[in-house]
Image (cartoon, rainbow, N blue to C red; front, side):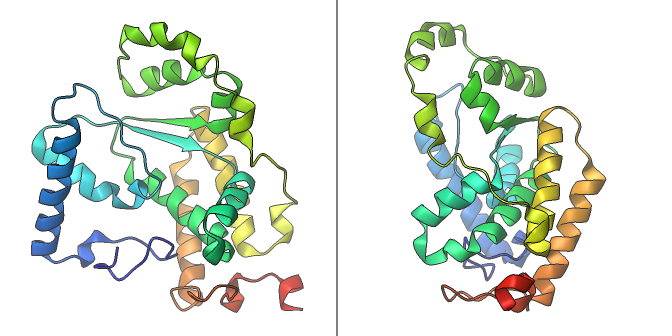
Length: 239
């Protein structure tokens, strides 16, 4: 992220074309080494990291070059819960939660388009975990090992309500400025996509509008905690 002039909490587009050829090759080699070291003997591997969404173009190159078949599972969680979790985990950057959520959600959707993928509602997974492997298998073609049946008794003991420790409603995003309006639209689109109704044109429209807002905000909201560019503030905050 540093080499393309950004940080993990930047609101700007992630463009790996900013890397030099030698930088790209070095990262591809290093990432493949780590992948092989951790999963070299595995028939099936799972990688999970929110920041992976921004680096997916590099991983897709690696998997293509190495002949690795890959699929993506996007676990969609509402902005309200993400904001609460973000504010607790990243106190210094709490004011950036909305921008980060928009950027990473948009990145994950865009960069995974060429992969077999499944979009899952976090709420649905908490309500009935059995629906998740079934949906992922149908959407991506992944064949889960039958041993999952032997783990059912373990999965049933997980207190799923405790995993919803940031479950809370929020006020109407439409009344909180342009970014919240975009977020409300993106939430609706992701919810529809989880039901098999993906609207690519609408996704692209939100991405374009968000990028325009970022540009109007001089490309990057202030890195100083507690400060934002005015374009990202609602009228009540400005008053």
